[in-house]
Amino acid sequence: FVSSPLKIRAYTNGSVLIQESMAEEEIYISQTFHDKGLFSSLFSQNIDMVKGESEQIVLNLTNECNGDVTVSFLIENLTEDWKISFSHQQIVIPSAYSGNNEKTVSLKVKAEGEGSEEGTLKIQYFPTNNPEWGENEKSLTLFFKSIEKGSIGGLIGVILLIVFLLILIVVWKKRRG
Image 1: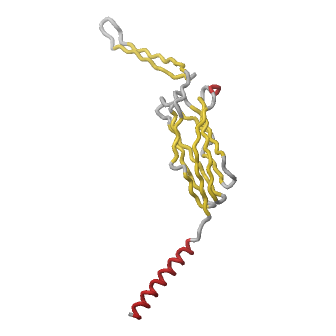
Image 2 (image 1 turned 135 degrees about the horizontal axis):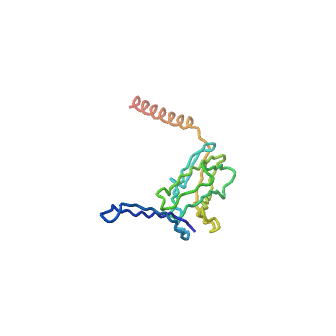
Image 3 (image 1 turned 60 degrees about the horizontal axis):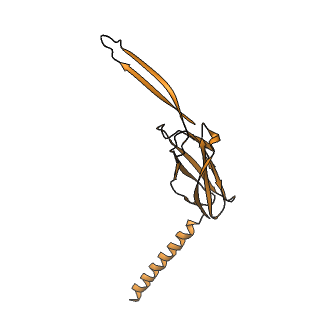
């Protein structure tokens, strides 16, 4: 069950026959946990990197459930060529009725190899006040691609060679014609 506070306030200004008064009572209402979903979004599910470099990816989470949820993260189906760490391995996201039901988690990705892989980010959650309710899970597919760092100097050299040859051809044609 999810317990939510409810405050009741009664006030009267008073009159000739009734004295001014105020009363306040707080009661807790219990209701069954309703899993209305945990929404997640990434800037991009395609992660293109250069071997040896790191990149930070932001995961936004929104709790639409009627109670606080505890959320944990797991990456599956990746080789040792990819190192992934989370800013928080487990977080609590307040209920949809709290007015503050969004959290952000950062993933740091490091490419230690070269190639392309498809991995799965598993987001597992359960009601914080009632873990025996059971765990729910959602998955996001991530596409990882890493390339070897190329030499920009070689590319510039080829471009300069082509420009030089074009200049030589233009000068040679002017002298002939």
